[in-house]
Length: 345
Image (cartoon, rainbow, N blue to C red; front, side, top):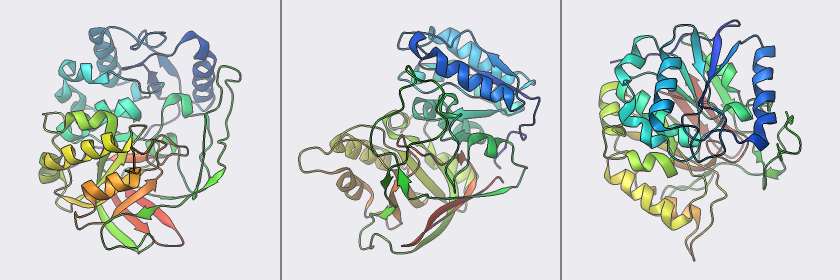
């Protein structure tokens, strides 16, 4: 089996906006409107769903959210679906999605955080590439030098090779206040920080140069898919990745003991059996007693016998790599630079 990439997005193509998990509350409607208008100004008509604006934990009942997502992803006029952000309960849609129907004419599904709960199964079950690392509310931010935005990836030609290099700087604390000002377009990146190796016996900057097919998502959501029909990473590796995998993991905010338990559960479910490398995000999640976030990763994954890189821009701490589930990726790291080069094939 091969990976099926949605056709490149072109100006004039419709972008669908729906919220399969949490909707946008009234107090942040200004940011949603601003992001939508920026897309339209870039040449992309926007179709707004009914399951979008809500002050509750979800944007609408599960059947409504599932039906709207399916309608957008199977409409030939809609070439990308970009939810405003993640949330908490996208997992309640999994049994309501017709996965085979989504493979017939693939459309880019873009997002991260709780959207990983949908991105990952779509790629694992159908071989359709999905795009992790951005959402609509963050789209107005200009990527820092070395990184790409989701539109850069979704508009790339079939077979394109896309290189991203860590800027080695990130936002240390806080978020922009979109309620007070919904229009920021530049990240506040104020804290230096590079990737670091955590695998046993390796120095933090010992060189890495590995290739594998990308797959991953947010630990706090996808860990619950391990061992289910929606999280069959070993099956995906056998069907689609004879070259092996590069597994990336976004740790949002769980404390270190929760992260450690999740990683061990994923390991027991075979998620790392075919891994050539593991990338773990930078996180603001706290330590637990004397167990740090790096300790938790070392304990669960340090003896896999493959490079394990932490503090990668694949999580909730800005800025963000644009990563394609299903793309072939070359990961390189040393004391001077760190990069991910993806081939859309």
